[in-house]
Length: 315
Image: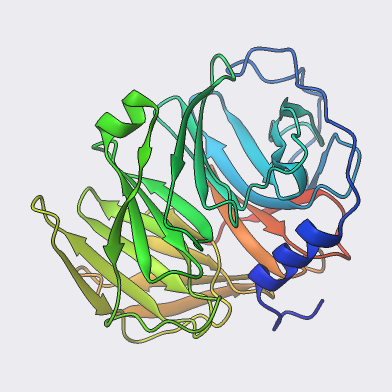
């Protein structure tokens, strides 16, 4: 697959055409105590998922409390958990035939899984590994990425519908309900089935989202009454913008070929490209996490095995 082909098209093809994989056994160690680490001198450049292969990693998240990272997979929605000093990344949650996971967010002792074309958000307790919530979005939606603010509010992007989805802390605690849709048009144009992908929160009321089709970044300000103000971030666009991670005051954005690092001005109205990171192991990069002084990167590509690539952070 070339870098110009949208992630959504590949995701749909994989769901419809991939052979069923055997269920991946769940890891038995407690979530907050990662599997035994194999000693390794210095950073490990590649982490391999300990599964049957062909699961297609989609997202990676750093969990500072346990000093581990989590990886979601598209085919059958299995989750994996690894350490920075161990090249082996064991299973954390079993694969389930028919399930998908386009991305996830780890926050407040929970994992929030965006189940793509299932138009569903699933929530799991990290300590017990049990599902604690299932939430539906609008019919025809394709949920892509989630962010959890300090208040416990959850915001989710949609690649197809002109909506940003919102779950309140009360809904998350209750474990069920329908996500509230926050319209993003007319400020954000809708281009077929490849629209909003990555999302990060700069604070409890300010988000940054990326548009996959045209690379435009947007600042979204939310108020307590449910209103929103959306403005384009000028100065830089990131073609094929996918996952977004916040590294201090910088944005790290996957761009298909690697990573683009951006500096935002104080008001998050202007962005400046300060670096681009390329690596031979990168193929259609779609997700990134900041883990100490490393960037963990997922490539969603049929040529790439089920791995996560680690490169030095640029600061």
